[in-house]
Image (cartoon, rainbow, N blue to C red; front, side, top):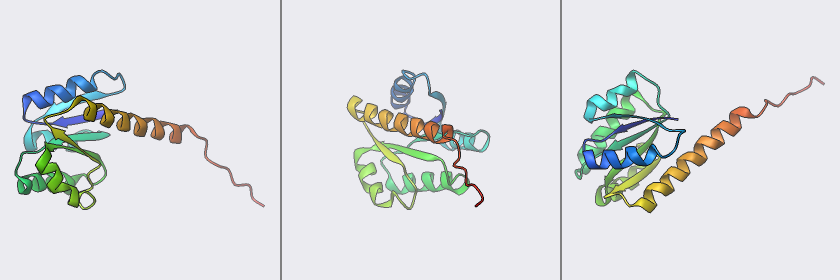
Length: 137
């Protein structure tokens, strides 16, 4: 699974990156700011982690910018707890798959990773199933 991690806080970025590298099925590319988001225009990723600051309005603009050119990618928003709470009401409008609050708690992070892995394995199982045949009749 190719993951893009866009986070300007080096400590948070390194925590997520090191945590994801514990699983061989994840390949992580990192970036910062709008330049990091623009990597989505150059390569296909399965999931993106986007770090946003405490300003909810700026967080919305960042997510809306990403959605302006990529509507389908699964999005995990990495944000301070209060900002994440403010954005929950717009989860469906902004098509946010999940939130990861900062400072990152190990248990929350690894629960999220478990959900990502479940989703990855479900997608692999679905693609491995043979298509149902309909006989003319």
